[in-house]
Length: 188
Image 1 (tube, one colour):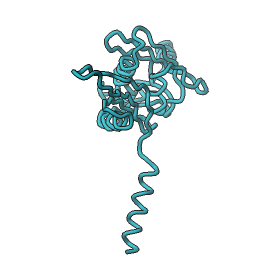
Image 2 (cartoon, one colour):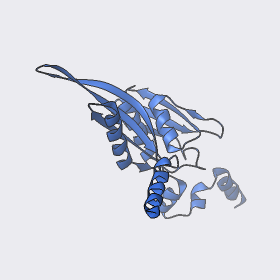
Image 3 (cartoon, helix red, strand yellow):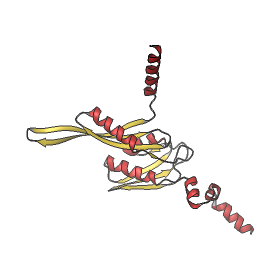
Image 4 (tube, one colour):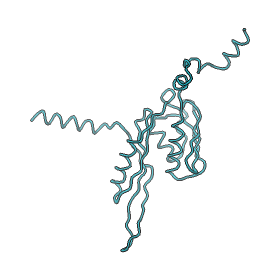
């Protein structure tokens, strides 16, 4: 009997400290016209992340709001991507993401800048674990398109380690400053 209580207690502890944080970005009331009138449902848009470099988004539709949010959260957990972060706080380089009419620009920022982003993009950066970033959304203001464009841009993010591996070089060769190259050329 004591073992059973122990196991239940452990399970409860795991549920209290979830692996992922989630943020509800948008909820829409949608209707379907049928013979007897209108049937209302809800569509939810949720962003999920571990705040350590993984993020995903999902959408869910149901007759009740909590069920729509649950479906969206499950879909977001299945569609997560890993994004390399510099010093665990910002992006490695400036990137642009596009989806449909949505276009977003994301730039690296010095420490202490914070998250300068609007609405849905802010949710993505917070769930990703980015501390300093400057971003701007151009084009579509639809939250679905903004999140898709942001995720598209973050998918293009490449760390120096990834670039070095792709080129068959060392990370130090990739990160070498142009000033150092000019000094060595002047000496020779």
